[in-house]
Image (cartoon, rainbow, N blue to C red; front, side, top):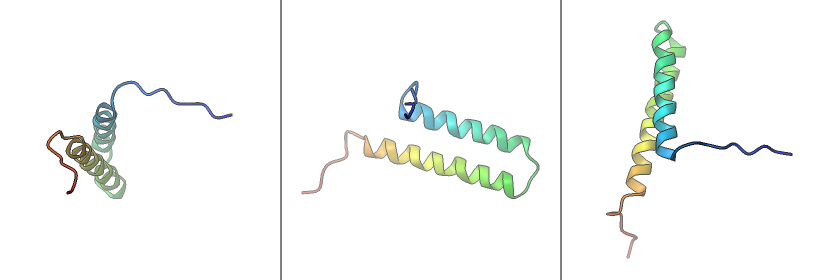
Length: 64
C-alpha cells in the first residue's frame, strides 16, 4: 500500500527548512535559469509562510 510520511516539526518549520535548503542549493549554482528557478521557488515558499502566519493569526476575524 502507501507509506505515510512522518514529518517532524510544524508546517512553519518545514517551510523555513525547505526555503533554506533551496537557497543553499541555488548558491552553489552558477547564475542562470536553474538558479533563478530555485530562487523563485524559495520566494514562493516565503509567501506561503507569510500566508500561513496571516491565516492562523488570532486577529483574523470571520466575515459578518
